[in-house]
Image 1 (cartoon, rainbow, N blue to C red):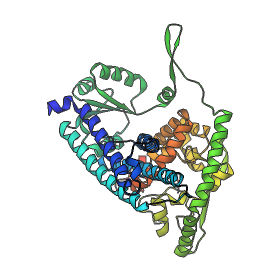
Image 2: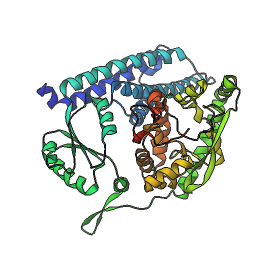
Image 3: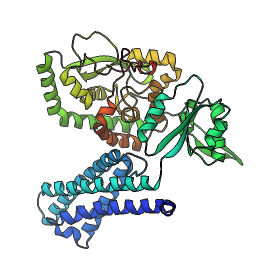
Image 4: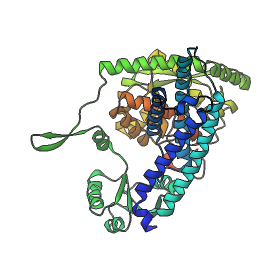
Length: 461
């Protein structure tokens, strides 16, 4: 095992090559049944193969790729399957266009059964290679010994719970306060150190010691860390400095973003029309009440607008509070809509109206903004960008993500904004459907035995 550990990076690289080579070969060999020219040496074949290679590279970068040893097997499978499906479909459309050009005929979407056969084989290959890859990685590498360092008056239970979901990667051996005398001994005795809400001054000293001892480091972010994310290293004369400039979208960026919002929303409205009609009928048949639900939310600059959603709760519900686990206010059809976030579809009207964007911070209830800002003054910084239907916080977070964690995700998006990041987040939104149970996890009701003060923060209802 020591021998394999020395060459594990090379082994993983070779395994990645085998995975992507198998996906590439399976596509072109199977499609050669109806398109024999795809295996012949020609410019058309070269263009098609290059397109497939570029697409699979881009989509795997967007969705996380073959992250052996980093992600759980299911997460890797979901990301690769999504990337491969999009790559196969686009390349197949390209093949059909080329076939029409070669034969001088009209475009026809031919041989969909071959696409199904290719995709089925590729899914099987992905599952096999993913489980084998993680098996091999964790056979070579034992879970890293971890220490959680937390500040006084902070309970790291939530962080510990998240770490323990990755038992093959991490083994928590101790939890210590940053002010404990044995904190340096704890660092020296472990491989990976997690810092939880540790004050900047104390964290800086401890991280320097971790660096000295060659320890892996994870730490929760503060405002100064968010600033550092978008800062750039610069040299003034012979002095190394970090420079940070106030972020504001240029006229060109605003124009492109708005154009993209309108175009995508119109397409989504046309495509989702039948789905919206079916949902409206289902809501009416369920309890006969109103189809839509409207609620005041805040967007850029604190502007108030009414967000549109499909109604998922009883119409007689007058309590403006967050959804909790097993909430009896949710209707039967509402539970399904919330699970797959289909209740959000009507927000395309908010986007067309200009109150929201496709990508941006989640629009919060007015009550939540007031409450969160009182407890966490930095929360108001989220209003520096127009609210969005999807975004980093919506994809990476859950309904019950804490206000601070949600703030960090939203500010990360704002400070690292680019057109490419918007496009990437749009594609990543598809993955929310695969983690529907986690992403729509509700707050625990205060009456539950295991409820705690951290889970009483309200979200949207």
